[in-house]
Amino acid sequence: MATALERMHALLASTFGTDEELADVASETDRRAVEKVRAFLKVLADHDAVCTLQVADRTVRYVDVGQVKQSLQRLAEDNLHEDHVTLTGHFTGLLPQARTFEFKTDAGGQLLRGKIAPTVEDIAEINRHLGDTVPIDVLTTQVGNGRPRYLLVRSPRWT
Image (tube, rainbow, N blue to C red; front, side, top):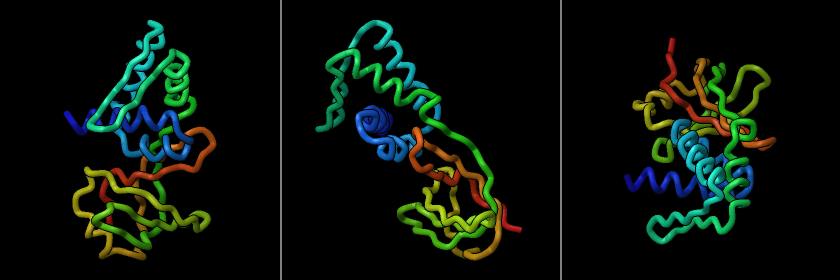
């Protein structure tokens, strides 16, 4: 429960920040959790209500309905874009403790940096295949016109 509240706090707090800050938090938050937070904010806005959420020593405070509506707008589906995509290329690096990766695409040679979802179990396997061409499934998260964030959602299928 504490983790869920911390995640909700981080998501709500990030709606007060930049597109980059919101994208960082949203990319690491389950889509259903984002929808629940969006629904919660909608209930507040519909009833002209405000709230305060305190988790440990951190507080998010909405002092007027305008702030609630702004957060709701920032989390709206037309501002917070998420897509599942398959990219082909090769891994150039991996940090197993940080669960981050670098991947160079075949199309355009773009170097992408991303995070690895907790559902991906044997990430050490990726290090054994650095440089091997492989398709990967990632969730891209983009806020507004900001740069996309990448989350590796399943282990690559090596051939």
